[in-house]
Image (cartoon, rainbow, N blue to C red; front, side, top):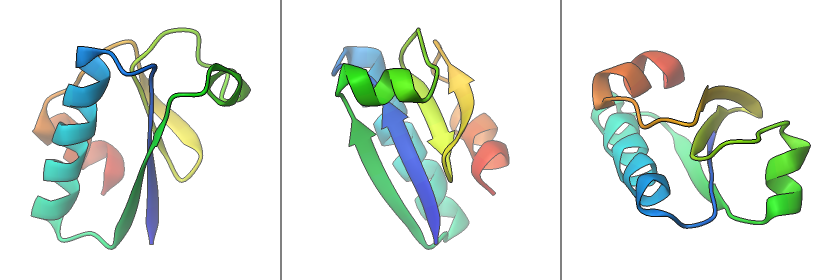
Amino acid sequence: MKKLQILGMGCAKCAKLFDLTKEAADSLGLDYELEKISDIQQIMQFGVMMTPALAVDGEVKVVGKVPSVDEIKKLIA
């Protein structure tokens, strides 16, 4: 099972990244867990200084932008 984590404080971009990541994972038919992390201490433990960010299995893949569904598919596949 893939662990997908959206790191962000709850801004509009963070919500959009959450929705697009869910769409990408569903369209790939992945077995996944999607988690939203909004605690600043937890976000900083990832070494992320800009949100939103996407982590896949604990590894940060995207920081400070909202990629397209196709880009997300490549990152999580």
